[in-house]
Length: 158
Picture 1 (cartoon, one colour):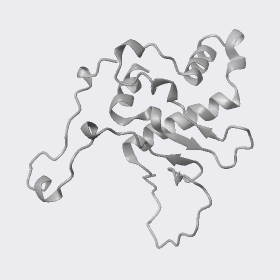
Picture 2 (cartoon, helix red, strand yellow):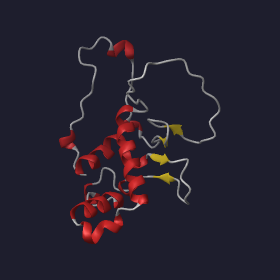
Picture 3 (spheres, one colour):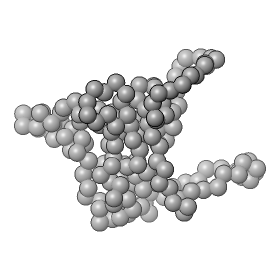
């Protein structure tokens, strides 16, 4: 999880929200990495644990004692966590093998964007500081041999 903790610093994983519209429970919005939000960029907060991941890890290593923690709530949070990771990298691209075609979209009664596969809905981070944003000027980038900025994850101290 320490690698994903570093991704929170660069991709704001803890600011994503995932909704399962067909969820018939009190909490239909999941924030799988939210516990990291308060300590983003703070080395002192590196020991903040993610509950659903702790439950998964315990049930994996000690099924006789911890299997009860492998519940539906933790499963949905784990799936939401995976969706956040994929969305942070690829947005809503689903890499389908199907041919592209003409689609007609109508009114959506959901307050979030469709996520990969369209079963879940997702809300993207909106808490970027000016220092974290970058300029995108294709007229300049198109002239550069190396158009991709590299992230030095070793400099991230979490």
